[in-house]
Image (cartoon, rainbow, N blue to C red):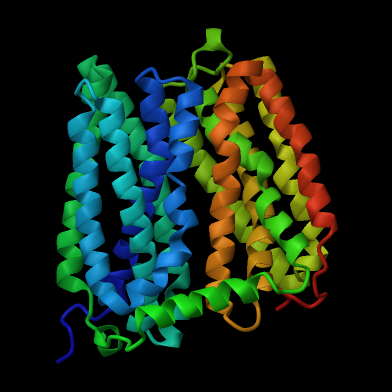
Length: 422
């Protein structure tokens, strides 16, 4: 019998909205919350950068998700776990052990979210035919971005406004996370009711654990035997080195007190600047980058994209020296940096696809995305300590100087002229 909610419009938008929320909570909202609660930049970047780990090792447990249970089961179960983890964060914030407790639940959320990503992307391909997959690819991307704006923008604004009303930082962030937990439980109930049950998803593979490990080993070996492996690995790990340093510290800079060298934005102002204007700039840059590469190919646009992802970092050097108090100037600077990053990041994503071509294409792309997460995790571990050692002004100068590495690793790439052309 045809499912009552078989239309993809009933579940694709909400599924990818649900995919974006926990990632934003773990990677962005946690930064702002810990800063508001008085944690040092060194501790914030160290602790939150380790939370990238589930996305780094995600390819190594994704094969087991395919054979142990249906992807629908994994989606619904992980959404319940994410909702519980959000509630756990909310519960621990007002306690004396808020740091240990919240980090524990953020870890649970991160692993659940990474597992949810695997299951959701696999389910998308099983539940839709190739025509509908192509038709809804823009919808899923749009709702993931909406989740980013909702989390990084509206939820941070909500917490900031609650701080004004309650005069209690911890209580305000606790209420915000309780609200988010309730929202996620609602998403869990919704998807438990409306997700279709494709027959292909119910079929369990007969592949044994030993065969899985053998296939995984074969995937890894062939990945490292590809042509230009050294140049490719260096590009994947170091192309975004400046962004890996900048990403977490720039958020902390925006909300840090003026007497500490920051801009002193309130959470509500941060939600507007970074969580809304910045995300819009990032999205527009990514769209324009995709259109450009689709017209002339990756090789033609590679160096313009390298300049786009590096040169706009200079706006933070300006902001750290000028410390403008006009929100319009701050918005313009953040928009420029995020637009450039979105445009330049297109080259990175297209190269991952280029490197993954051939045998084991899907598995090799998964390994590429693991290296992508690792490229953000490693610099983030020490970014806060470096900033507190040299100050914001010199830190952003170091970020700009590190852009040399982006140019060096790009220079060694060899890309086919026609790759990416329409």
